[in-house]
Image (tube, rainbow, N blue to C red; front, side, top):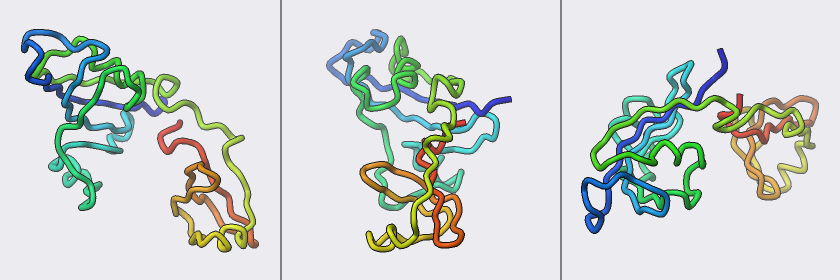
Length: 159
């Protein structure tokens, strides 16, 4: 079974909108959401402090609590935003996206081999698992061998 992105979220409409109205594109929403991998249950991102602590992804520098979202503005992946359409204030919803709907398939063309000294000259720590940014692209170091570094620029949740 392929990995799936899993979303659960709760909407809170802004006060100036009638409470009984369902969310639609262009609406301002305050939402709590938790994103995870469907097959493994691994939580990837959340706005809920208790969930972050429970799943071991708590970050003291992050502000937890409902996030402001303009539905359709692209602040979240468009297919995740679609899950909020039609929700009413206080409603909780869980949705599952297939890899091609979420973060796509892993593309071997997004895995590059770079000389370690090139990264070191930029002040980048060359260590397996290290997240790095090169020329505006975010990647993760997969391996280091013989002065060469293999960097995966695919989205971390690409399957």
